[in-house]
Image 1: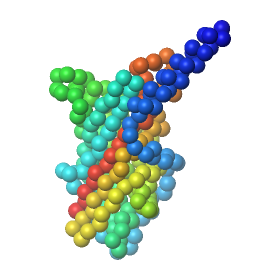
Image 2: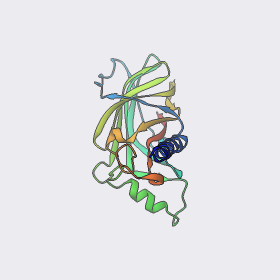
Image 3: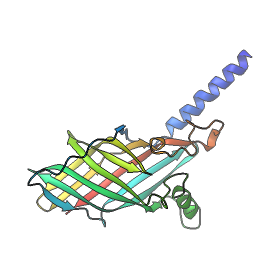
Image 4: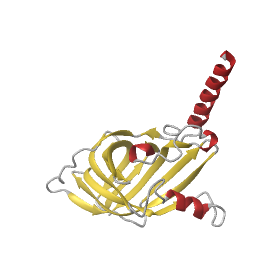
Length: 212
């Protein structure tokens, strides 16, 4: 019995270690209850998000591998005052989800379809995800992320450049916990005996946004 207990303990530790080792890179975004979005500051200048150059990169991992892809940012605005960002929001087109590490006819379409299904993003019921800035402080952005009908406040690192002609926002690599937004499929936090089929709760994200 003692040997059996030791074997189970080692197996659990190794499984956890393997899952952590294969987690997406980046800072874990601080997640809190959604915050109140302030009204735009008086005399703020508004720029319109450029949907042709703005996007979100994503990384999903499991014990046996990983996948990468993109979402399009299809609309939004950014407000500035005195050379600083004071507000803004943007919409992420969930139906634009693409997997970039698989080729057409070699699992790409199957994975994209599964990620758009109710198991994950449920693009039919929730075709858009939104992010509304609530504050910008010391190289980090805090805002309300609505994903699959769930809204949470998240904070992540970002480099922001404000010029007369527009604004660019580039985040560092950061992660969110998908189960915070109701995506529990394949999560070892909720289901036992998944073994090498377990999918990491952490999803890696990187946002590149341009507003003019």
